[in-house]
Amino acid sequence: MSAISERDLLESVPSTLFIGGEWRPASDGGTLTVLDPATGEPLKTIASATAEDAAAAMEAAATSFEEWAATPARERSDILRRAFDALEERAEEFALLMTLEMGKPLAESRGEVAYGNAFVRWFSEEAVRIQGRYGPSPEGNGRMIVSQHPVGPAYLITPWNFPLAMATRKIAPALAAGCTVIIKPAQQTPLTTLAWVRLLEEAGVPAGVVNVITTEASGEVSEAIMADDRLRKLSFTGSTPVGQMLMSQAAKGVLRTSMELGGNAPFVVFDDADLDKAVEGALAAKFRNIGQACTAANRFIVHSSIADEFAARVTERVTGMKIGRGTEPEVTIGPLIDDRAVAKASELVQDALGRGAELRTGGEAIEGAGTFFQPTVVANVQPGSEILREEIFGPVLAITRFDDEDEAVRLANDTEYGLVSYVYTEDLARGQRMIERLATGMMGLNMGVISNAAAPFGGWKQSGIGREGGAEGIHEYLQTKYTLTENPFA
Ligand code: NAD
Image (cartoon, rainbow, N blue to C red):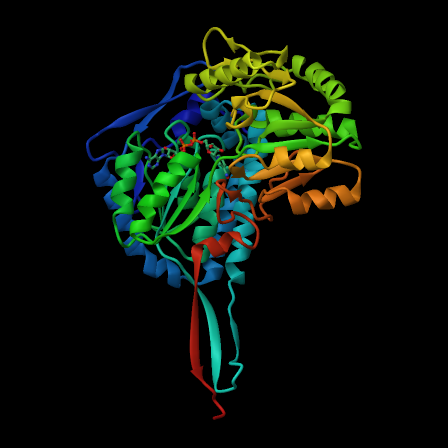
């Protein structure tokens, strides 16, 4: 394991844009500074792209598309495989870099390196399995050919909460399919993307195939790219309001879109659940990533007969959690990403308490440097509380009660989101009924963490469109052509 210092690591990360195979500053010399959320101190200053830089990145992606699309799939696959191997070797550095800019505990960052890199391996394997079909028309008068083609240059926008995995699960399938890309990471956590794209360059990705624009001017930069009619695809992960706005921009060019948006996951615990399992699952589903995951359990919907015991058991565990900078040993709760996130967690807790919920532990922002919020449990949350409607995106576990299965289903589905649900029951038939009744794109059945590169990740309703990972993931970057040709025997 390399024991690189924080300073040397930050020094090694590129500080410029990557356009057409060149690392270069912003056209107006503009910069943005990335902060450590655990201290509020600056980590590194990097280029902040302008609309002009965005247009240059678009140009590079468009002009390199034809050649990349024609590159044999095996070559594209091999490049991804080399990138996978290189990241394995440097896993520790990437884990530290993510902890520095995003704040999560180092152990969780190591987990994200493994998870994020799994997409690179998975799509290096999928690249060589892009297939079509051939067969007679039903009338027998012709032959039908169905073939798959890369959709074209793609614009990828990622959020700050999983700095590596959100980038790899877009870039890897795009490259595997033969698409060129422009990626815009979130301005809070762009360093991991810059470091990883440098690694892709070293693995042999040709100039112009991957372009990175880091910027403080997301709106302007995105508009410049979206206005170019050579762009064929938008893949966005982030909040639902920004996703909706981008979808309306994408309508102009009739772009293919993949949208991974917000969530409001129900975590339903039936009275026949194994409570030990449910408590473990609850802690993982709630506190991973300091609660800042689209898959985070947002509403704990617990049968009345066990709600008090469940609350007592999770509270006991939560009060033992260690808060601190993610680099410190045994820390399980790092900082939230910024002041706004702390204010939001605080407001949601206050609203719930004001409507009759009971505070079991936590509930307060932590004074001093960094943006920390105490891990919190609120029980008996009453209907109408904001915390049941809004994505909390913080370490707050909110418990509400139900009395029968129909009520549990009604409460669980009472949201415009539909990303993931969690269900704890030992009754097999009930578990199967939940698969059919809960309106979410994913479900953990007696499991608190479900993400896997081999699975189609994505939501129903306002949680999104399209899937990332699995056999489905590469099809987001492919388009179908049907060709009719003559019957060769006629
Ligand atoms: P966000 O929507 O604020 O930002 C996401 C990205 O969009 C960032 O790169 C940001 O710079 C960019 N952006 C913001 N305004 C823009 C504009 N006008 N034009 C173009 N780009 C713009 O979200 P966030 O706070 O970074 O991330 C948290 C959100 O992401 C949560 O809602 C979470 O649920 C969601 N998320 C979803 C998934 C999923 O797979 N469904 C995964 C992770 C996060």
